[in-house]
Structure formats: structure tokens, C-alpha cells
Amino acid sequence: MKPPVVQPILASQRITIIDILRGWALFGVVLMNYYDAYFLGDNLKISHPGTFTVVLEYISAYVFSAKSWTMLSFLFGYGFAVLMERLHAKGRHPVWFFTRRMWWLLVLALINSAFFSGDILKDYAILGMVLLPFYKCSARTTFIIAIAMLLTEPVLTSFVVKIPSPHWDREHWPLLYGSHDLMDVLKAGLIGTYYTEMISPFYGITVHWVMMTCFLFGFSAQKIGFFSHLAQHKKVLWRVWWITLTFALIIIVPKYINARLAWPFKEHYPISFIVVLAIMFFIMSSLCLLYLGGSGHRFFSTLEVTGKMTLTNYMVQNVIGCLVFSGFGLGLIGREPLYFYLGLAVVVYLLQALFSRWWLSRYNYGPVEWVWRQLSYGTRLALKRPALQAV
Image (cartoon, rainbow, N blue to C red; front, side):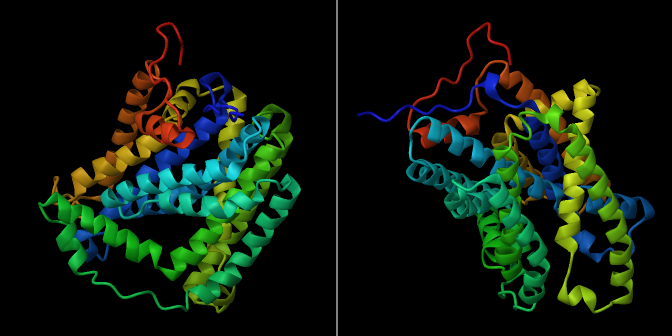
């Protein structure tokens, strides 16, 4: 008997707030990726940045740094639960389908890593397979595991930071990335990804631990239908908003004092990622409450349309960054003021929003999403929209 056909979620079945959150996270990703380009090249020699630069650094650190990839990780866990639910409804066993899906995501990650040595797709592809055994778990079980992982992360990190990082020729990397030869630039991307992420103890253990924690939180949220019945959970949203805001404010000040006084507490229980997740959940709950308030339609519409093409926009951001920063392109890495890189990120994001709106008015999926979904589902999917179908 031929197995039931599983198709991607239709536009009418998408949950708006999920696309909005994806759009916001994507905005933070491009800001921080281009932000990192400031701290290389000639800018490494700047020991006393100006006041405006310092303000931008603080805003970036507390509002966006690590908040975006953790939010995307949460949403990946949410999407995983949605997919498992649909496969179960169709009577399809998830292991083979999801393994194929993650394999093709890993292939896309290899391409993306060549343009940007900070790719996150490979982590989702690999950790997605670690998440797979949890697909039958209840929301309660995964939530408890996520809380336990969050609270034990600082202990784990205190040991991980003592593991020496692998040695690599950091001085040679700028020469490759600054080359006018595209193959050298792509090689630099792959080398940077390998040394700074794939075999880095901190990234390989701590960062992946945090990603998995976020996966499980997102999985739990979907299992209780949190976002599909968002208005019914408004009281919970306000509770999360107040708790995370209070926690972040209470912790940030002692954390700052601790950093200044070098107290030994941080060596045994560093709470940086706990603070990151508190701020991330504060931002997420803030966006949800603002959305329920019914204002800011244009703002949320921009986030939504960009979030519908997260994979395409993410990879294109990195290609644009390569063309602007590398020697093959304009060679502007680490040469301009910080506001140039953050401003460029904003411009790129807004242009992507315009392009996404135009594209989705004519096509069902983003171009990369279309390719990935066809490879995942093993069937040809209609790309062009019917003439009268709305976005």
C-alpha cells in the first residue's frame, strides 16, 4: 500500500505569530553577523571606541547578542513538534522522513558555511537527530528536561571552559578571506566554521546544550498549543514578561559587579546563558503581547513576510555579507565604523522584506525553502501561486 502523501503546511494553515517571531529573530541574526565584521581587520587596533560606538555595543549585547539564535532554536523545536504531529496524523513513521530532511539541511549548511563561518544550519541538522527520540514525549516531560538542562548548563560550562581550544592558524585566515580569489574566500569560510564551531569545546558542548534546551522549550510550547491559542494564554504571557524582566534586571547588575570585582562565583556557576534566555523570553513575550494588542500592523507585517522565507533570507544575508566584507567583494571587513555594519544590516533586512513580499505574492515558497521541501518530501511541489490567490 502506498504511504499517505505528506505535504508542507499551506499558507492558510500557518500561525502568524510564529512567522513574526522568525522574522524578528532573523533581523537579530543579520545585525549580529554584520556586527561581528566590525571587530576584525583594522578595527582590532581600536582600544578606545567613541561614545556612540560604545552605546551601540551595549544595545547589541543586551538586546540582540545570542537572543536571536536561541529564539530560532526555540522555533525549530516548535516546528519539529508540528511536523511530528502531521506525520502521525498521516500514519507516516517520522524517522526516515526526518532523517532525510535533516540530511538535506546539512547539505545546505555546507554551502552556507562556505560564505559565512558562523553557520547555524549544521547545528540544527545534527541536533535535530538528537531531538528525534523525544517526539513521543509529553509537554510536561520535555519542559522538565529543558528546565533541568538550563539549570545545569552553568555547571557544565564551568568545566568546558577549562578544556583547551584546538590550535589553528588565525593569522592565515584573514589572508584567505581577504583574497580576491573566490575559492580562497569560500575555503576561509569552511576553515573558520570548522575551528570556531565544529571542534571548539565551548561551542560543541555548551552552545549545543543551550540549543537543545531551547528545542525542548519550543517543543513543549507546541504540544500545549500555546501559539495556536495565543489570546487564551495572555495571562501566561504577562507572567512570563514580568518574571523574565525582573530576573534579568536583578541578575544583570550583580553580574556586572561580579565581572568588575572578579568574584569566584562566576567560575563555578557562570549564568550568562541563563540571562540570555531570560531576555530572549522577555523579548518573545513582548512581541506576542504587542501583537495581541492589535497595533503596529506594518511592523508585524514586515516581520511576518520575512519570517515566511527565513531559510532563503538567512542564506542570502550571508552571501551579501561575503560580497561586502571579503576580498572577493568590496573587502570592507573591519574597516568601517560600527554604525556602518549595523546600518547595512538594517538596509539588507528591509530590502529582503520588500523582496519577500513581492516573491510570496507570486510563489508559494521561498526559493531555498522550495528546493529543500521538495528534497525532503520527495515530490514536486507547485511553486507558482494561482493568479487570484492572496499571500
